Image (cartoon, rainbow, N blue to C red; front, side, top):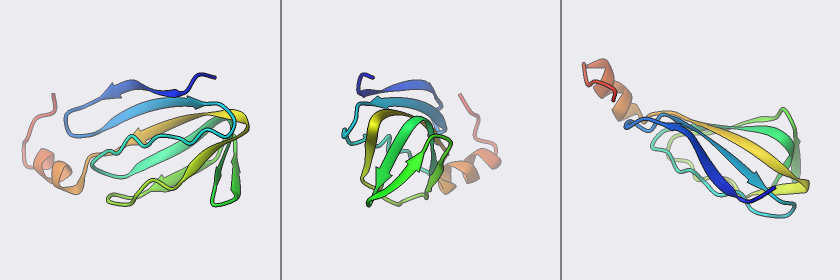
Length: 100
């Protein structure tokens, strides 16, 4: 698997979805959205602080929290990241700010 982040879609308010493949032992890059994000382990596994998260795992990183030091497991990994708008963006949208 080649390293790198592929954008599946991205909206101006930070909502988006991304895909990242990484070979064994490679650290995962952070998408750094304005809001929180879910990391979904689609293939292989991810290791964070010595704990293995296998295929099918779903990890939450809250708004303002740093990405944990995630590393691709022994067979590499494919991770989908689903990002959310910040609280401020959500409030603006609810007040009538249009999405692009």
